[in-house]
Image (cartoon, rainbow, N blue to C red; front, side, top):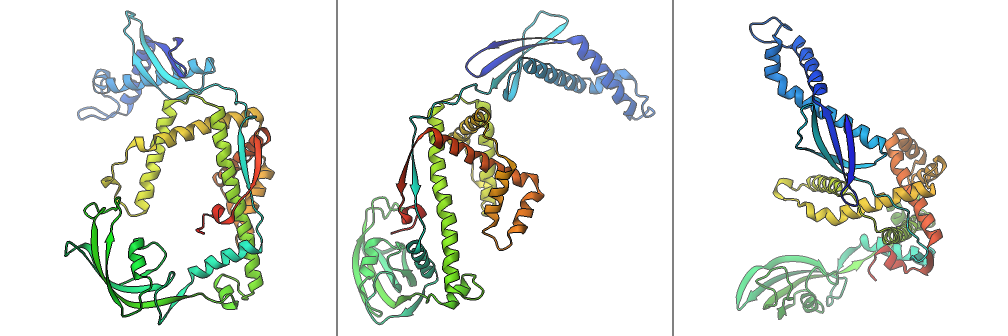
Length: 434
């Protein structure tokens, strides 16, 4: 066996492999003899089929298997000897050779990029800060109340946040158009369920009132035949209902899972949950900036083979997600290019994180993993059960360990970069409408 290497470009490598024909033939013959001992064929006793018949029937298969195994062995020995980190799988191409004793091949493959983590001293990271107090609990309570709103009939003009029930008929050039008619149609004013001009026309009307008005559809309206067109609507308001929020009392607290209905206990639980969620969101925003800083400081080339593998993984995950949603995947041709950018980013970050963790010794320790498991378990009714569940399967702990390592990287980056604390707005941080 002989092997030589030559570099083609930044990550691609070519290895010339030479395999002795005699070795292949010898191993092939031994394999065929073993196969012959168990071979059954009409007219022959088991294991007594002549070797030339065995070879005629299975020779090509045996030669292919032996050659494939020998190539794997020679390739593995070569890259191991050269301490080459192979990314993906090699492409083996036969070479034209005048040798009568050896088969010549070229293995083409990619290697992992070698780099030193870049300087982060110029990276700027803005860290949101927010203290959860009574005001944030009140805002969250308001949202919880609105989620449990009921409606009562109101003998007055419809206003925002009212629930109205209407009949409507839309006409274009005097002719009703598809989708422009409904009876006993309910919606809440101010939630954007209908076009703004439509809601404005309903607002101020009482139950039993009918009116006609013109409406111009937006130029980007989803129904192309109506986009930018002016139509006429006839509406009849059949019911106006005012919102009624529940009282913050013992019954409400029980509905929120507080067995004894203690309102103070409910507020304390909301505050504890809010603090956990605010902490999680702040950490998420900081982590996103850290990853961007690492990408900017480490403009590395990544192996195409790894990106292709990640694309396939993302495509498979997308298919499974669609199937779980009841969609017929075969009717949706998923294209690899949809995932190309995401795959490249994920592979790039993975390589950078691995190098930073190795270089700076940022591996997670058991105590750190335990603390994270306990923090997660604290939000459940039986924390000890949750902790036991995590430690029952090693792969569950591996997921926590992965997060712990990322946290170590974040802490390390923050120690190197320019970090500015900035007070966060609660509604913006939580993604709530003002």
